Length: 169
Image (cartoon, rainbow, N blue to C red):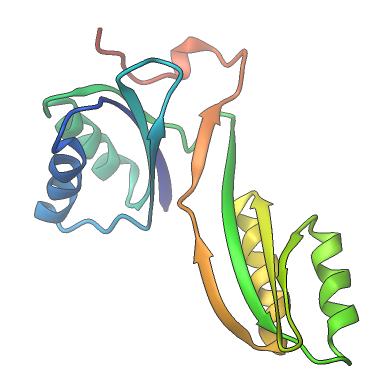
């Protein structure tokens, strides 16, 4: 099962290296990784998608708390949350395929960000499943390049605090 882990860290040199090293030493692959500043100065949020069973993820969570500069760790997989990814996708076009490609992009609320006689580049933001669905529909036209961000997620407002794993002050 894939788990979404949200980690709040202090903005200090080497914190991401220590976290990724922890996963590497234990033989875990990070399938998706996104890092960015939060509303708190000097604090960043790292969102990771990691495969593993509940017991393994619980052990990783405990190990993360032992690292310097880690403030809060949550496995938000089963907590109501809003998650998004961003994808830029460049696809081959011809005069015949252009209308169909643009129609598909429109259905997914994708924005055309570059356009030429031989290719069109679209930008789409949304749930990871939505991103994947658009990609699958455009494969038949010939995908030239793809760039994706990692998953980002926040727990929904009003979620019972009992669901939140741990806090470190």
